[in-house]
Amino acid sequence: MISFLEKKQKSIKESVESFQVSDALFKWALRRSLTLMIVNAQSCCTGHLKDLKVGQPNQISGVITQNPGRANVLILCGAVTHRMGPIIRHLYDQMEKPSWVVALGSCAAGGGAMHYSYAVARDLNKIVPVDVFVPGCPVSRESLIDALDKIVQKAS
Image (cartoon, rainbow, N blue to C red; front, side):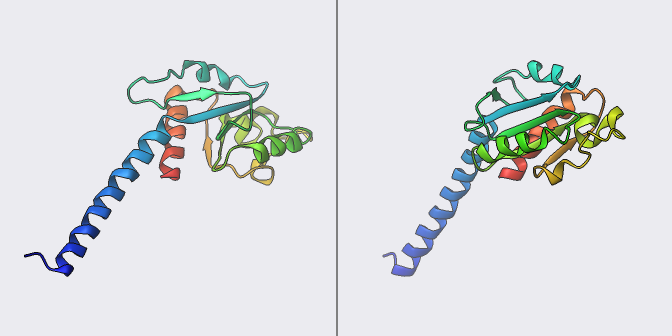
């Protein structure tokens, strides 16, 4: 005969196993549900974004949207100017929560070739909280996929 304590221990064990399955399911679903919104400030780095294929093995599946209310990842490409700052902040505030920001390329990360221009906002963290900086000019496709993978890791 099973005692009350043994029943409770069995119930707790099943709950923990169930939680582990649901955590794995959450990670799997998140990996396949990234909705990307791209802000292109005249950048050469956006060419790799069109190469993202939905559902290919070892890649992040992502849907690109122009509606900030449906996006959960904001990708900033190019040198962001001071005039663009309030617009980018407004887009970020409208995004689905939780949301993440990726600064794609040297221009987005620190101004790139236009770093010393008076018009360039060199520190994006003063505008929006950047989760991942992806260096390079141009950014490699693998770096972009790694950045999106880091977002999935942060979320889970």
